[in-house]
Length: 342
Image (cartoon, rainbow, N blue to C red):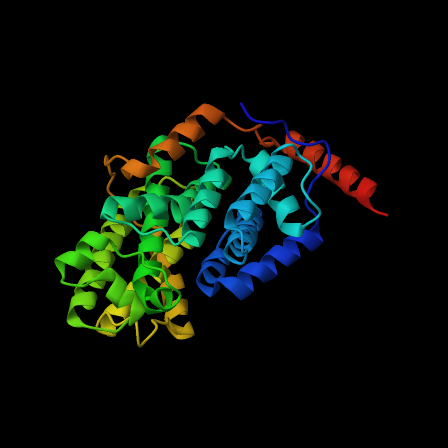
C-alpha cells in the first residue's frame, strides 16, 4: 500500500522552474533527453533529478556523511507523509513519489549509494560494481518507469539495466577524475588481473594500456546492458520512447568518445558535442518507431529488491481517463491552486 495523495498540490510552478534549472546546470545530457518527454513526465523527471542532485550534494559535501544520510532519511520520511521540508526539490519529489506510488525503499537505496560514495567504498568484483550502480542509477531508472506509469516487472528490470549501463559509462568516463579525488569504481579484481595495484594507481593515476583494457571491459558491460534495455523501452508509452532512446544513445556515445580517446579517461575527458547530441536526438525518435526483441533476462541480481518493492507497493490512484473525469480533475486543480494564492 502507499500513502494517499494530499488534498492540495505539494509543488508549485516556481518549484518546477527551480528543478528545471538544477537539471539544466547539472546534467546537460539528461536535460537534452528530457526535452523529448511529454510535459507531465518531463516535470516529474526534473523533480526526480532535483531530489537526486540535492541528496548527492548534501552527502558528498558533508564532513559527517552518516549524519547527512540520517538527515536525508528524516526529510524523506516527511516527504512520504505529505509534509516536505521547505525546499523546492523536497516539495517536487514528495508530489511525484506520492502521485506515482514510488516505494520508499527506492529513494532510500539511492541515498545508501550516496553514502557508499562518501565512505570511499571500493568494489571487488563486477557484481559489486553492479550493486553500487543499481543504487545510484538503477533506482533512477526504476523511478522513471513508474512516473511513465509502467510498473510491469520486466519493464522495471530493463529500466534498471539502462540505469546501471549509464552509471558504468560514467565510471569509464571519470576514471582519472575519480582517482584524483581518492575514489575508485573499477573492479579491483580486474585491476589486479591487469597487473595494476589499486593503491599505487590512486596515488599516481596515469594512463596505460592496462588501465585502458579495464576501462574497455566496463564499456563492454555497459553496451551489453544498453542493448538489453531496448526491450524495456518498447514497453513504455509511445510518447515517452523517443526521450529514453535518446538518453540511451547520448550516454552510449560518451563511451564511444572514451574509446576514440584510446580509453584514456585520465588525461582526457570524453565530451559529446552539441551537433552530435542533436543527431542522437533524431536517432532516438527513429529508434522509438522500431520494434525491439523481447528480453527474458532477469534483472541484474542486485536490482531484484527494487522489483520486489514495486510489486508490494501496488497501483497508484488512477489518473482521470474519461473526458468528464479530466474536466473534473482540472476544475479541482484550479480550485486548489486558487486556495494557495496569497
